[in-house]
Image 1 (cartoon, rainbow, N blue to C red):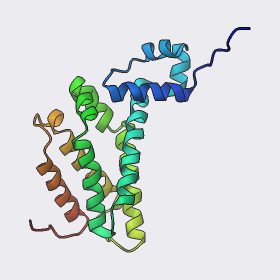
Image 2 (cartoon, helix red, strand yellow; image 1 turned 90 degrees about the vertical axis):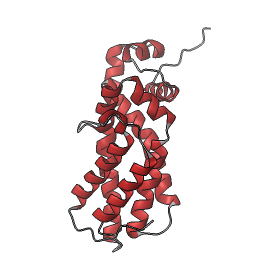
Image 3 (tube, rainbow, N blue to C red; image 1 turned 120 degrees about the horizontal axis):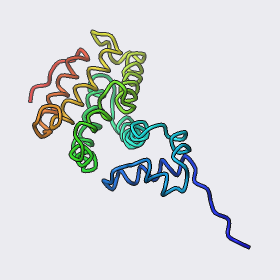
Image 4 (cartoon, rainbow, N blue to C red; image 1 turned 120 degrees about the vertical axis):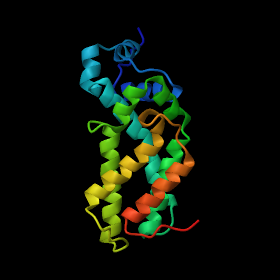
Length: 195
């Protein structure tokens, strides 16, 4: 009797792509389909294109950090939102894997991380909007602007800090992220805290 070969699944394709990204390897769908011993058409059916697959990989890394920040941050209201924002974005500011991804192919990274078609960007805005709406519904914040716009602006502020090396040609800095946190506080209707 011969040993039964285990067939690859969509989850296998995702896990392999995630491991590759974390190691700093470039993801090529042709190589990935060969490794999984499946046809390229099958892989495309499972994951869509490379951009969509990378978006899923990045979201799988972002969402646990976001959830941890939400649950580990005490309080509520403006201070809570700003602290969660700071915690999430500080984690990514110092992510070696993210920096490596950005430096491998800056234009492609910017597209995957920030474009209006970006899975990560869109889901980040949606998740941030839910957090803001929860705080509004609980009576903890009453922002002076539309929640959807506020959420979008918050995410764009973070992106401008995290990806300043590819957007503006200067290395990301913690001080700039702190300024973004102050801007978020003001956008939320809070007062800037004096140092």
